[in-house]
Image 1: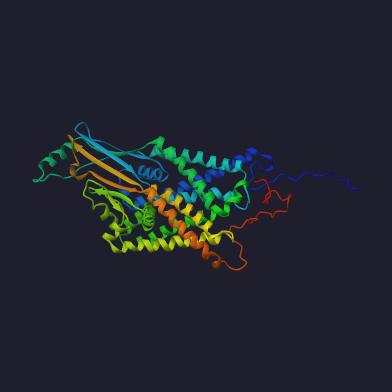
Image 2: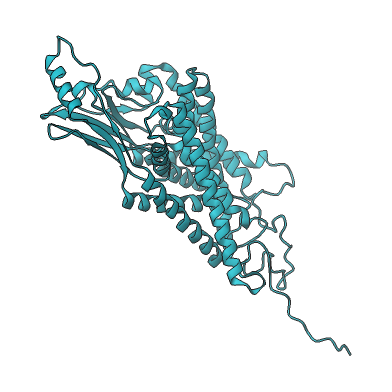
Length: 468
């Protein structure tokens, strides 16, 4: 007869287990440090990208304002709102507006923050809801605190000068120019803290949610495991589709020449143009106009369409209007067909065998529609600025307007139809592309580094465990 007393298994420990070794304070500190790493990685990548882009655009020559402009670009990339301000004394007025997102900065910052956020969760099959919520809350609080600090730095004023406007042909403009210079006119920018924090909250929560949806190696709460086969293959395929369009845009931009200007576009706004090309390629549309000396770092064909209006309305940007300026724009249609079908095939091959074609169509249709519904509003651009003296506007040619608004619902609806069609076709082709006996990538089962399930007495980190 054994004299040994029954023992209780030691508590589960590991990098993702809150309260490891019965020390909640230590676990909380570890979560806080991991959240700080994710926030620091995201902002560091955004700051470096924005800094290089502004340097390539010539912003380093701004008198004492490079740091403030850099902070403003990072704030805008994280969803913040910047207000244009102006002052020209009692004789003159200044008006301005700016709404835009530098999506290269946004994309790289989101990828960095999401990757570092998911890193501590690797090698586990499931994650407790409480642990996941604590990690997300820590990242969110630190992210918003850093965003508020940047918002405080993102403010600066620049003095404007009309220069030598005196000509015998425009004596009135010459007189007003002298009056305006005497009034010491300034233009500047400020961050609107309330909208910035509100949009920043939505931004970081969206980044964390998308990171969990697209990462096929990261754990989910146990109650959501049954849904991962319907969500993750399509979600990861949509992310790869967006990145593929950015890569294609990178290749096209690299062949343009004008190294400094091209580098500025690549580092600040490449996805703005690339994802517009995706939307136009599937039949979506934008509307807008460009007036005055200002413009956007955009392809010449797009600038031509936006300046082609009669000055009172908005020009439509779609496949036919672009092709009217340059017949090569028709290539956007076959490129969209090839890349969307490739994404659909990837999602179908990564799904479990035996999923019917109609279900592939449903998954990809919903996934593509939601993707375009999310990214299309990010391409919105509205920029206006004007100076006036004694009520007479656009003095010295300093006034201008740039507007580019997406037709969100049309583009998202067409994406839904494209997803249904390509998803169904991919579902028919996927069985022929799988190797015999090959398990789907997302098939349920223990992950690398997680113990295999042993029935009701599975290890603490196995698929049958309540979670980490």
